[in-house]
Length: 68
Image (cartoon, rainbow, N blue to C red; front, side):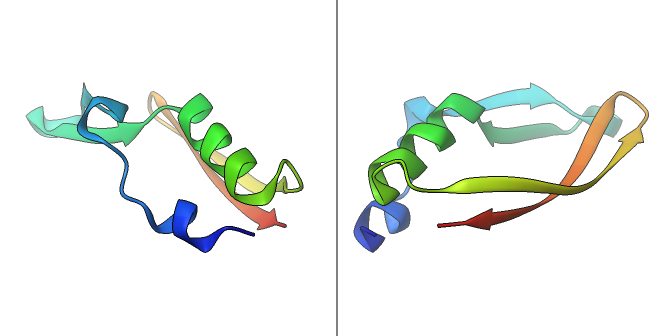
């Protein structure tokens, strides 16, 4: 595991924005960017188990367990 890779802040061009509820603007990082970060840090030896998910209006909230 390369902890330094995990602790490196995402660059401003990797942080996207979208409209949220009540006129708020939400910052997020795209899934493929997070996957690449995990692949780099763990040499591809990681997995994600989805524990639960809930539908909330037009969003899906997921609880997961990351193992490496």
